[in-house]
Length: 208
Image 1 (cartoon, rainbow, N blue to C red):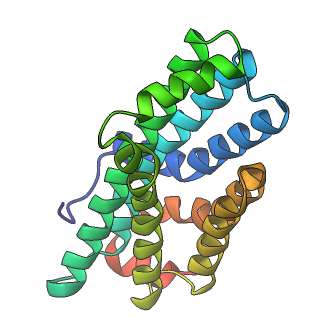
Image 2 (tube, rainbow, N blue to C red):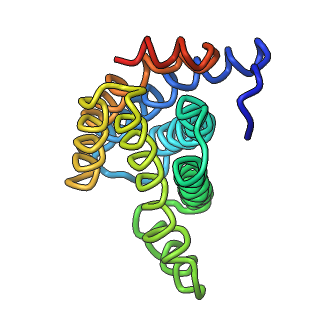
């Protein structure tokens, strides 16, 4: 992870991810609200495809945030890279959870059948912490860690970590609030995508 210039393709993909990742979360939350039964069917499948897409795009956002922290050295560099790694582990966990949801939705005929399949999957040792409890939390830990560090470094405005914190808290309060959480993430993160390819001094001047 160096501070070498990014190519136009990677830059464009990262800029897009900063906008599209929270919008995919918004789509998932909206589709979920349209399906009160939360059972197998088109809404379940399309919603979770949106979720998986959004999470994978956050896997692009995290290295983009790391790039915004550069140039840095010593403890600050180690801190940012550790946060990025934790966030990416969380991305992997949430992605696996989303894939399980899609497969369960395809295999089950109704919600009761889905619950039985979930019990079967979650009964395997290590699955609950890795995929459902500890693992997904690492995504939020890494994301918040990065934006707080960026604010401390003066690379972004202090209100952006506040919005990220509110977005995380909103999600934790209930899955029905995911659309609100997505809007908070969008407000906090989307404008930052345009800075990932800028020279370090330019990024610092444009921090807001």
